[in-house]
Length: 113
Image (cartoon, rainbow, N blue to C red):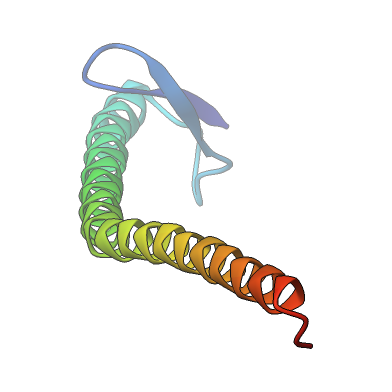
């Protein structure tokens, strides 16, 4: 059995590769060197795949951020409009209530109901 580390290009361990047995004889130095070479290539492939995955995730996050920004830009004017309408409606109801109260008071003063 031969076990070799999978080392990233930055010399960080990312795993191990283990070869259990050889069909004939024992593993010799040539076998070990070959396995180490293959392990180095596998480590580079794993690191590259990881970097590609990170780049895709970053692109997705930027896309989501842009969509979020666009949606917020669309909602903000509607929200401000709704707040303005609420203020106008409140003012109208207050004015209507004041006019109605004055009118009723005037009717009562004149003896009408």
